[in-house]
Image (cartoon, rainbow, N blue to C red):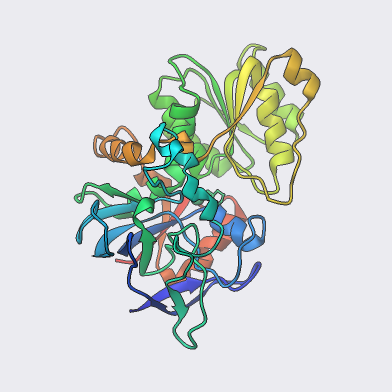
Length: 376
Ligand code: CXF
Ligand code: ZN
């Protein structure tokens, strides 16, 4: 079928919104009519080359929509189901899926192939048939997508998909970092470095877990205003002086440091942000590395002397260490009960034709928490 999609052709080139031919689902796949997709910093990192891709590629990985066709052998889903597309798949069969760690699912090894699981693409440019690469199996910057059933989570059908789409990446990553990775207990203290979509979701997770001090750090004051709205108790405008930020965290916590810190920035910035997060934790505290560093950056400036003598821990977190098939429906319930706030996370809605504006907003840094592209 023919559809409109935003195709990326090279590093830092604007996406081209054009007609793309989408093939029907093969065995184990479904076709989804997208209702909405979030625009995540990782889409932009892919465009800037920090997370390299083969071109052309159809980006987007935080989508929600309705199933319009199921491929052979698909039993978990049927036409009309509302689904979230997740940026990681879970096969439900491998060792990791069986032991409660679906973010480590063995299918993850194929995520960077640009193809679906049988090694082929369903995407071709309508004008000349040129093959287009898939992105993380879901390619949501399009009116329709074909994805493996392993990349879908079924959700209730009476809630707004233009908000629930955030559960496919950003919200689950941030909220899960606070609730699954850190298991924050009442009264514990946290430093949140980076208050975009991930950081704001972690603040919500920390607040819902009963955290005491929630110290939000960002270079942009606008983001810290939002952080307060979601439950931050203290804010620090980072002035690119890591010592100063960590010193302020120390003052706020009476010279102790916080129990946990979270790095949510990633990309090229991690020299500063990881150092701030590391310095902000207390003796025996844990820093969670959630932002994905640029692939070219192979080191982080961490003081090994302090790490050993202060018994500090650094832990990587992927997709909020969630069991996303089970957790996403729970987050849908929390949203319905107004215990989590997705509505105010979406600070801008756009149409697909304006997708480059959404990318520019992310590059600017201070304009949006999350932008969502709506298809209907
Ligand atoms: C990222 C993680 C690194 C690869 C691209 C997707 N996750 C979510 O944004
Ligand atoms: Zn993402």
